[in-house]
Length: 162
Length: 105
Image (tube, rainbow over all chains, first blue to last red; front, side, top):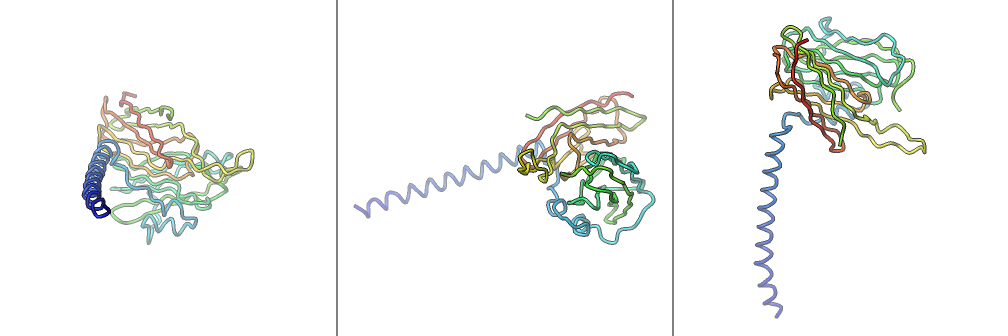
């Protein structure tokens, strides 16, 4: 009896396994297909960079070594921000072939606030940040594998973190 | 379902000035509610802007972007009628796509 049972079950299990395997593969393909149509454009989130608490680590995650101070990067931000929850920051890079702009609030719990890959032909981006306290806001601009940087201090009257 | 974005794309010369306003709480994960419990992090991580299907800006955000985020960019070589599509995705799987058409200033 037992022998019979086993010999019956095994082929069935094998078929089932094969079947689910094939379905799994199909499902993966169709999900990948959907992603491609909708949003394959987005690069993977820079988890290491956004979760690092130290400025140096955040910069390292961007690949930003040997940064060059540049006057061709303009940070537009208030000198004094009364409300740290909403600090308008705009960054313009006049360096030709700018590929990306990253924005860091150096004294925030997680300094890296945002990174933008820019292919619009105009290296400008504007957004609003939360800032916990008075701090330098640093822009890091990537151009042909080189990194340029500029800072502007923003005094925060009431912090906006927490 | 997340609220619709407000997108304006105004042509100035050969450049479209694109302004995007997104409705999102952008919770940092460090804030406590009235009962002292941490409010879980809930924030947009990815924002992609396309012009007629071509990516013009691929942004990654942390929780440091303000609540109800604003994003401004400029698209060179834009024309009247160009389609601007914005898609965001947050850390909890939420996402939304909206579009606007470049119009004269």
